[in-house]
Length: 195
Length: 240
Image (tube, rainbow over all chains, first blue to last red; front, side, top):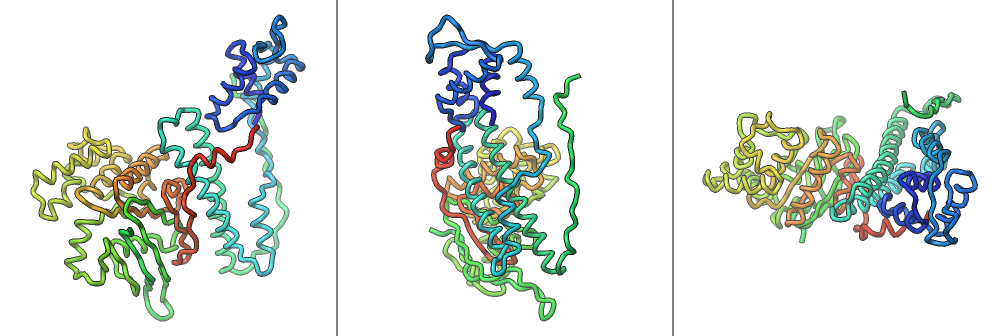
């Protein structure tokens, strides 16, 4: 996650102190991503070096030193918000690799490997879901973070379920033909959707 | 204490070459106050397990205990009585009677069991209120949204003193917000003492359960460990 751009976003609301930025960052991310105070100041220094923010020159170094965003910082934030993360090439996903490796190993039951991971992911989902039960702590930011995590874990389980079914069908139908190299889809990452 | 217990259940359909082993060696117990989800792919035996647990179908062998009573010891009428008095069912397609209002749908099982109309209606209204539907009591099913229809179906399933809820993909036809509401309500009913089994292929639904059991080719192959405190998942998050 980009702490750099999250801090820029907070500063786009108005000038803020370092400590204040840390507290607001944690509150906005549902307290799910605690931030090291040292990292806040290192990031602020780099943002200042790059001309994206400016510090209040009259203040001394420390928690009371104020920062504000520059015009370049506003433009950088806007470009970041409107640029999709790079999902165009498949990540080197450890879960996928484990299942693929298990496929080729003699004496390894790939369905059992799939099930071990499925159970672990469902257990994680149970814990995230339990967090939803206590509605008193469930504000909008936290709800969005929990939903994102649940959908991420759910997508992995869906892949495991699909893989399990595909392997089962392949076992019934016999060996599949040797795989041919295939081109990966290339999607253009467009910056922004503005008119 | 277990309210529902399945011991060494087998279910075989057909004979000889066409024999299908739908369930094999199923052992499952569900305590009062707990929600168990059964996950599995299509054809894994989930729905068969549910119909056998609810005495809608006989196992080929093995025994089902509901409230400590073995179902094999009950006559056909005894099973029907047990189903009317103790077991509620929820299906994906709601199964509400179109010609009856919400409150009439909910009070129907009580009236079929001999409860007076006025008393049945009062219990039905109370159940609808538990599910946030007091203001929809006089609405007919076609006047309700999908989420409301399913909530009426759950209110009907738990009305009176039912102690076991059996649900087959209860939110399969709903969007994610309504599905979450349905699972919250089922869990809340469990916190009031109900034992519930939800069968589903959906991990988001299953994750509301206290325990998730995994079914594959008619066998239970795995289950989740007892739940840790939900805060454990936050404690394990790394600092940025």
